[in-house]
Amino acid sequence: MTDRSAAAAAGEHGERSDGRTREARGPAGRRGDSARKHEAGAGFFVRLTSRWGAGALPPLGALVVVIALWQFGLKLLGTPSYLFPKPTDVVRAASDNFPLLLQSVWTTAYESLLGFLLSIVFGVALAIVLATSRMIEKSVYPYAIVLQTIPIVAIAPIIVIWFGAGLNAVVVIAFLIGFFPMLSNTLIGLHSTDQNLRNLFYLYNAGKWQTMWRLRIPAALPYMAGGLKISASLSVVGSIVGEYVAGIGGGKGGLGFAITQAAIRVQTDYLFACGLSASLLGIAFFLAVQGLSRWMLSSWHESAMRIEN
Amino acid sequence: MAGTVLREALVGRASSGDRSPQENAASQEAPLVVLRDVVKTYANGTVAVSDVNLSIREGDFLSFVGPSGCGKSTLFRIIAGLGRQSEGTVDVFGGDPERSRKQGGVSYVFQDATLMPWANVLDNVTLPLKLAGESRRDRIARAEEALALVGLADYRKALPRQLSGGMRMRVSIARSLISKPRLLLMDEPFGALDEMTRQTLQDELLKIRERDPRLTVLFVTHNVFEAVYLSSRVAVMSVRPGRITEEIAIDVPYPRGEDFRTTPVFSELVRRVGRGLAH
Image (cartoon, rainbow over all chains, first blue to last red; front, side, top):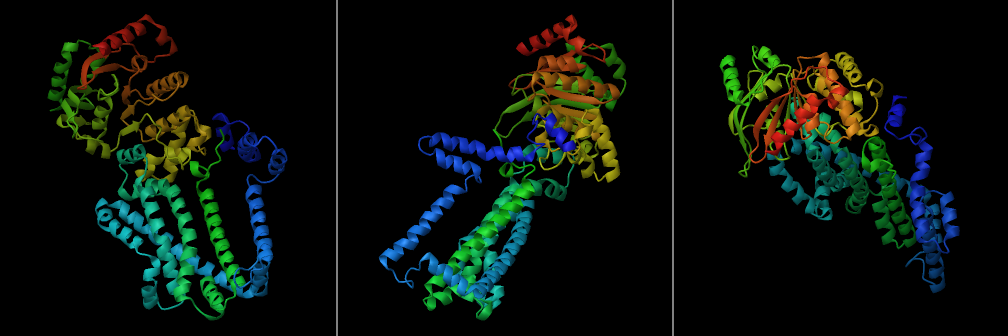
């Protein structure tokens, strides 16, 4: 109630009291622009899209066109399925091996999630330690950058030696690949606190940890959200790369393992199915993190707000 | 010890000849803030302020006016203990500004409302108490008092971005009052507001001071009207190097209201301050 009256007093009558008006208006503005651009001939398309979700139709349309070209192009050329499978072949391979595929996706998702969580915990923790002292930061951060430049594939075998083939090694690789974006983004965020607010905390005699906890970490959240998005997608990449080198065999293999197996057996259609599942998994991770950061920041940060002009 | 400091300060300023009867009465007490021969030179050689001598007594409302770059804010930061002077001495509550700040009793309002965008009005206002480790019950009770004082009692749960510029400044003022300061430092608090809001907030500030006449306010502004309307004294500053060229007493008793703005005395004082600035 107070929320609403505050908004009304701030001169935002109407929009806030009815969330739907806002939601409906944002995309409408953008559509208005595109409508003006394609005025001639595109009337039908514009009318159609305005009834559907904001910009969902153009990419969906493009997808349909690409899949159709893929299907009928290959059919026309008569390319064998083991060289380049048609979409229908891929779908059939996926449904024939569905329990296996699901198991692989689940394994990779599990590994990625563990690696991702570890990269959040260690990335944020190290960033906080580095941000508390310029001295520590100056002495440690350069090595973090050097570490980041080492290609993960190059050190993967060492990790397998240290942690043994299997889940542990894969999770460590997924963690390593997602760790640095988390660290550097959080660190930048912790250093970008508004100077006026820092002065204010200083003037009110805030301690180092009070300033960290009450000011610097909340102010860094938008930057952390950026890091989360990068790390989330990278951790999926990391666990698949990890499975290439250290994948667990048998029924418990992840997507990376399934891909290598399918490649050896020239099951190209199933290989495609695995690859597409991997990218879907990456997208799911990304969207989950995006949803989380929206929810975290929507009330106050520009990056997550719906802006109306 | 404090007595000699005061006498020197008075002698130093005697040439300006603007001593009011009130001021003479108040001068029996030890001043709250004393600046002697303060010079601030930045690392690049810029002399921001020089030869500043000031003595501020309890209940004073002293405004610093001057063109931009005259060192108003620098002087202010020195009194706040945010930066150190290069030469001279600064006494706040009879001690080092840094130490006095740590003991509490000093509050700040900046040109920017400086609110935490993720925290609601209540959390923003209670920040100084939270940092000082006060209990939650105390914090809320005092926040309600402070918010009522600035007319924002109904906005406790609102986020800063839902408020207008003037309302944000009220939140900032409520935050500065919640710690019950003896000395309030305001650095161009109304500089970014439109004229209507600015005048409303000026009146509210005067009302707040009426409730607590012992509250000492140091106020930075480049607006001559604002300085005359609010202050008991105006220090006119010149640019490069920043110096206090003139001190003008505003001998108009409080409470002051809207009608003060239209009196001949007001116009005359504005002219005097304006002339001081022109030098």
